[in-house]
Each structure stands twice: as C-alpha cells, then as structure tokens.
Length: 637
Image (cartoon, rainbow, N blue to C red; front, side, top):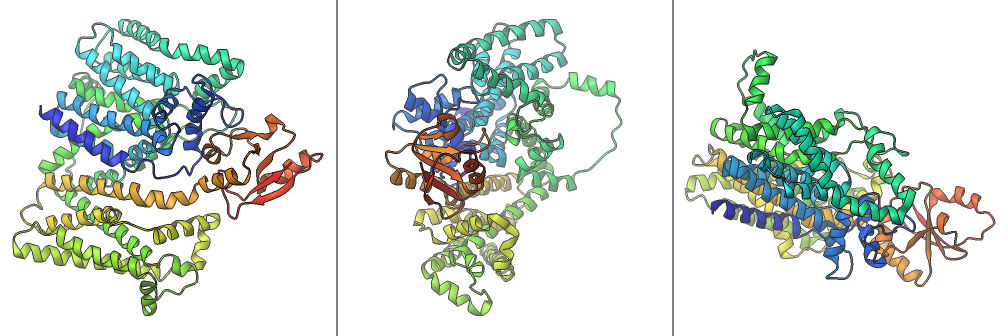
C-alpha cells in the first residue's frame, strides 16, 4: 500500500515537473520540427506507413513515436508543440514510476525513491524528456524490457516473457534493431555471469529476438512496398551504416572520451555532489587477484549485478560506433541512479558534510539566478550593451525607467526571506537565519552588480554572430509581462534557498542528511520549474521561426512555396512545421512558377545554375532566421 502511495506521489510530481509548461516553448532547433512534421504529414496525407514530408522526404526512423504524436493530436485536430513533446514526457514518467516500483520491491523504498528522484533531476534526462525526439521513448522501451527480462529471470527463466518482447518490438518500431539487440545483449551477459549455459541462453534469446521482430516487420514490409529500394537503402544506412561508421554523410562522429564527458555533464548538478563527497571518504589500499574479483562478481547479489551489467554493457556498446550522441546513453541513467542512490544513503548515515556543502552551493546558484533576473528586469543587462553607461552613480536611471519591474523584483525577495525562515520558532535561530539570508543575498547582488560594471557593447564582440541572439534573449527577459503566479514560480528557488540557509543555521537540522537531501531535491525541482516556465520559453522563443511562417502564410497566401538548400539533409524544418508541411523542394519539384525561399549564402550558386529563369525579388527577413542562420530572401518566378 505504501509503495502505491509513493508511486502516485511520484506520478503527480512528474506531471507538475514535466507537463505543466511542456508546450509554451516554440520550436527553435531543426531536430524537434523534423520529427513533428512527420506526424503532420501522417494527418494531412492520411498515410500512417510512409508519409512524405518536407516536399519529398520519407522518415529516417520507424514510425511508432510519430504515431503517438499523431494519435495524441487527433482530439484537437492538429499537431502542436505540446502534443509533439508529450510522448517523450510520458516516457520519462513511465521510467520513473516503473523504476521506483521495480527497485522498491527488490531493495527498499528509500533507495528506490531516491533513485527515481535522481533520474528525474538529471540534466540530460530532463532535457530529453521535454523535447520532441525519439530517444526518450526508445529509452523507456529498452529500460522496460530489461526490467521485464529480469522478472523473467526471477521466475527461473521459465516460459516466454511476452511483455518484454512487446517492449522490444516497441523499441524497434521507435528507432530500429538496436531496441531488440541491446536488451538481449545486456540480459545475455548477465545470465552468463550468473552461470547459465551459453547455448541455452543463446537459443532462447534468438527465439525472443525473432518474436520481437514480428510486429516491426509488418511495418517494414508495408513501408518497402511504398518506398521501394530508396527506403531499403535508407534503412541500411541508418542502422548498419551508422554502427559501422560508413554513412554517406557525417553523423555525430565523436571519439570514445566523448561518452565519458557527456555522462559527467549529463548528471549535473549531481556530478558536483559526487566530486565533493570524494574528499570526505577514507581510502584503503585494496589488494585482490583477478580470480577473486571474478568470484565476487559471480556471487554478487543478483539485483546489484543486474544494475552494474546494464550500465556497463550499454555504455560500452555505444562506445563502439563512430556516431555518438549524449542521448544515446539515456538508458544507463536509471541504472546509474540506483547506484548513486545507494551511495547517497551511505553518506546520509556516515558523511553529512557533503550534503551541507552541496546544499549551500545550490542555494548560492539559486540566489545568483534570482539576482541576475532582478537586474534583467531593471534593464541593467541590456542597458550597457545598448550604450547606456552603467555605473553606481546612475543606478537610479535604470530603476526609475523600469519602476514596476524593479519594485516587484526588489520587494518580493524581502517577503520571501521572512516566509522561508518563519518555521524557526527559536528566536535566536530565527534572527540568525534572517540575517544570514539577507547578508548572503545582498552579497550575491553586489557580486552581479560589480560584474556588470565590466560589461559594455565592446564585450559583446566575443559572441560573434550570436551577439544579436543574446541581446534579444536578454530583452525578452526584461520586457515580458509577468503575472503574480509566474513571479512566484520565478522566486520559488529563492524561497527554498533561504529555507536551506535557515536549516544550515539551525542546530536541530544541520546534521540531518535526510532533511538536507529532501530540500536539495525540492530546490532542484524549483529550478527546473522556473527554467521551463520562464527562462527557456522567453529566451528560446526569440529564435523561433513561427513569426516567419505567419508572415509567409499571410504574404504568399494561395501561392506554392519552394525552398533551396544545397545539402540534401537540411530543410527549413521549423518554418515548414508552422506552415503545416507546405514547403516543397525546388530541385525536385522543378515548378514553372511560385515563391522561392533561399538563404543569402545560397543565392550565388543557385542563380548561376538557373540563369534561364527570371527570379524577381519580393522581400527578405530583417534578421538571421531558420536553420540556415542567415537572412532569408523570397523571390517570385
């Protein structure tokens, strides 16, 4: 009963953390609209097998992820940012809740709950869960199939693990054969270490693999009937060619050390905690032979061995191909979370100082973020860059020019300090906490204030071509209207930060590792919430091509639009999504008349190639746009 209550609580936390602001950030990269437009083409063409998108392309990946987007979009009749990202978010929710139930049953609630929260607060995992990409869904199927195969092992490998096979089928329908190969490889290594007969394991897993291929093959055959040899060539390149590093184009080729770095970065900010904790451990010289070590591995507790094998095998597997991306390693995160959770429980009972230092550091980061937000709302970030001299003598100019924003930004933290430390009934502790919070926040404000004195228009040159993007993002934070509730969300990390300071000032709680860990998790969720609700949408929407699409929709209503990009792999994905997949490719369509959409850097070569066609200039964008990061020109022909 307790497990169910905790699972439901985790479910509610996931919904709040992942779904509340999932759709307010517009597409601003090529990856998300590239996937979403496949679902758009499914609905517009009523073709759920192999629809054509971006003028003449067929999907590069199997369609299960896009089926989910299209199905979730049916009630509203169109594909939106929210419905495009919903499958990824739901996949992480399934991983977190099912992972908790899996580990709680075999270990205990404390480790399982901490592991679930660690998974949810990993930077890499959170980032992948709020974007329209296939990787989180693939991860859910791979991790789910491993959990189910372990349950099959607990039944002494009797019968056929039907649900594990269905999960592997789903994984293959999401991204290809790796969804079947990887779970069977991990479980095969685990069973062999446990002393199972190689040939029996091999025979069973060949059978399971064949069964897992049945459902995907139905789609592959249907897609081949539509796409023919072109589809088959694409499948071979995306799977075998990617693994062997023999693709016709360069695809995320990175050295082996790249995977180590992505895991370190992906676990931020927990990587910092682990690094801090290393200074408080006692080290002893270990002398053990390889034979003894192997015996210990074979005799290890099954769950512990299963977790380690899952983590190591998946990591090594993705070190083999030349193509490497951080999201490929997502399946290792739930298993690493379990191992880190056990370590955190050990430290909780033996070493509290790492918790104190880490909690203090996160409190400082929260105050720093809030301080930057305050100065941004007061116009002090864009002012110096726009030529308005910023010195302590004319600070009144900035505040008076943004009086409303400044009042909210300054008065709110004072109220929050009082609220955060109010739980201290001891007057001495209350006063100590209040003073420490005020002094700490003033010190952070002073730090940002001094730093701003070194910023001027000249320093923006280090950003190169991205300087205009940065200025627009800062202006968006400064000028966006903020409601009371949004302001409360923005300052939520600050409330928790002051609360942590009050705990560190209290003799009653400062030595409680569990209390500090709870507050660390709360602070991290508050930071994610503020980021997803305000910082990411306000800054990244300045890079969105939705305004360009609205302009094109109005200006060229009823006319056919064609694009030209030299690379066959690139298209105007974002603009095309917001135009409901109406942009066609000029080179393939070869139309007699219409509107040409082309980037400034692509014009010379294109017009030299088509000298016999008259292209009349119509308009151009006022700033660099789209995936080309360039001025976009429009010509009528």
